[in-house]
Image (cartoon, rainbow, N blue to C red; front, top):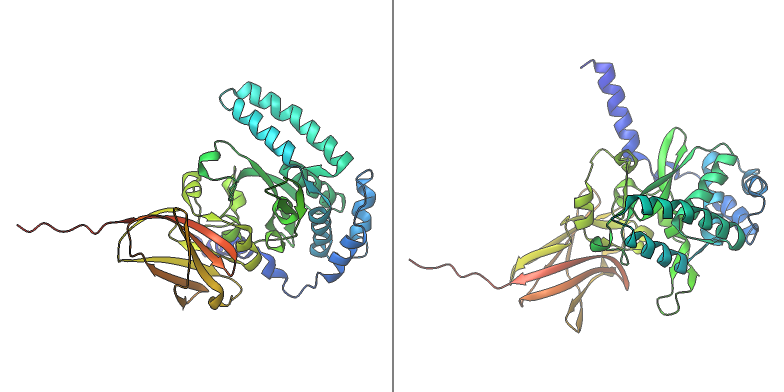
Length: 344
């Protein structure tokens, strides 16, 4: 291979891997956020004017996009009932592609009307609004469709793409973000939406983003190490706090594990910010019993942490790796009885 071609390929590969918020560590987003909060409550009747108001006094594209992102995340409410209605219809028509396509087209129109009128939507509306506002100020932004996986959407639920998010081009690099999951969550008792801004989904690390997002086109993973849908669906569940603290599971790469009684189970986490390891606990659920365990933790090279715990009884355990009281990820561990070797 020509050495110059090899050099270009190598540089492009590095651009993909490094496309994340740390590229802008010297940028102060305070002004962008303040502008976004200053226009809190603005309606969506005039998107060009809103885009202008949010970005005109900001010097760089990344700050302009930050103002748009913050505004959308803190002003647009998740619509639980629309989400449930859409999920039910898509499940009903999952084996009839014509009916499913017909529903998707009809529902998209409903989504955008409700977004404009009530500032309530599902992921499609969030992604559409971010793209629209960014494009109005000449920032290249795309809607990415694919699979989103969290505590409410585990592997068995994901029979077809269920989520949308954005990719944005800044300084000739593509970055990933998700205003839907930055904005907040539903109250599990009332199903009312509660705003709770999570900055971790803004220009997220591609390796972390891939833990709960899988695009229909794998080029939008923005990383060289590819995965497939089957591997994605078998992986441990990752929670939004993983994004807040930039810590996420690396190994084991599958959620359901088997270990022998009295043998160590080992978990490896990637720690991008350098958390206080004294805050890490295991929450182990066994039937109705819940134990909070301080495991053995070792800091490794390359921003990694090794967590070790020995199960003393056989059975099936839900193992939540927590940072304080906040869950980072969940594994399901089947602890087997020790197999005795036969003596001839």
